[in-house]
Length: 317
Image (tube, rainbow, N blue to C red; front, side, top):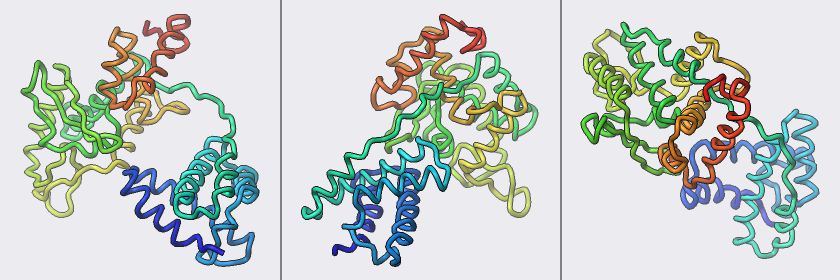
């Protein structure tokens, strides 16, 4: 019997983060999937997870595990498919290391994903977006900071983590016609985002307010609390802090609806820009998509909206 422990260790510690350069979020999701799988296998075979064998991870067991996820844990088909994707990825890794289990790998990789309902991409209407951007109090440092983040997400498509990562060196308000920022995005790729006049002024206001904080941190967006006296510097705002901020203002303006989250601001940027006449290629570049095919989902939304604008885009078109 071939111990599974050294192979899963190599997969999670080297294959994913080093060779495939998977994001921390992906690594955590895969690790959790295998935590659930090995707990299931441990109960099935009556052994500790460290004593499990590779031969025990066959297609019938994987199918039983997926069935357990849905019936016992109440997971959706989408979550079930995500767990299966992690197992498939591991089996592709194993087939290069252990030729003796090739047929076993083939059978596991042949397990089909379940069909899922295609969710409508949730986004804000033009009126909701404007209300959201006007919600922060422009007379306070907190409001100036929050509006700057909301503008970058809703008008330029930045992800939450991209706002979190943004550093002072990435901002050039004098470049081009209205300034630009360098964004470190998904897949460890950099992209340049051109700013509008409105965005430049919003960022200029925040950077001026930020300078008064005398923080030694190089992050653009800082926390608004201090550990000791008010002269202590702020810290880089966390992704959790950004999400809480966005959800707060969504609730304030009444736009917090089922399916509408921080990522809806990114969807709103794409759909509203396409509806206003921007090219699909330009939107794809701004969003940092590796392929314009990924961006085409927004074009389908806009096409549908032309037939029923009141239902899909709140009368935008």
